[in-house]
Length: 319
Image (cartoon, rainbow, N blue to C red; front, side, top):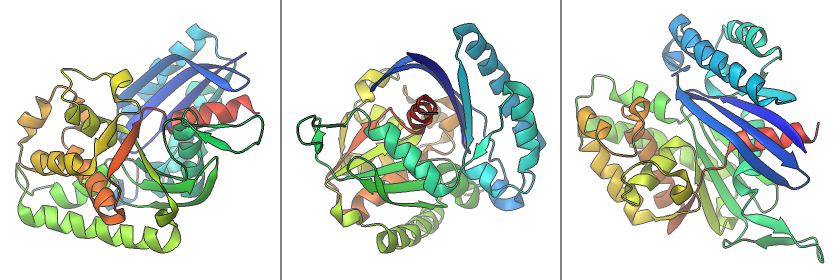
């Protein structure tokens, strides 16, 4: 058994998974998430803001103490969209090295997609010991795994591994900053229409490069998807066990997306499953999910609480 620590630093949040890995099983010891908004302004300035870096480093220092307390023997820090796009990403790398003693991996969109696929499908498919072929666990492969992040969204098609993938620059933070800033509260219909056009343009590109039509099951992950799932399930509080592997019909996701754009910021904050740091970007994230379901004709999305963090941890076990 190997105890590892995986850190995923995205555009909106920094997350930690400490896990014990033994052969083909992963046992979660600790999972944490903090909204730090590292990607604040990156779409506009091309740089990581000093205050965003400091928020991120403060969260990471807390994670470093947890890693030491739990005795993890290997640490891996992966950074995604916001850091890929930043001219001053060396400032980020220097801070990470000081805190964890390791170099952060600023992964490409394709690498991010592979990690997300590994994490999201690890408990959906197993290989038959008799035939070596994939055996679905309550779902039908091939999968379209969709990871809606803050700065980008990853699309991956595959059965037991990523066979085709693409990362596009539509994420809940990026689109909210681009279209919702100054658009009113609730936002104007024109702002929502402009955001929808951005999303649809990206989905046209995905359809050209990734064979989404092969997928029989859509798997959605990350905070926008799990928040929409919590709302669809009408939970009184966020409950990862109930959200994991829930199935949200496309018409329900559409209804929630429409409802979120009709709510004020304070009304979104009052939603029981809403993380306070997500209230200003959840409308954009929900709209991305809604447009994907509509564009590609999926009747539902299977929601996963397992994601890129789990993929990072699995990768550590193989090093």
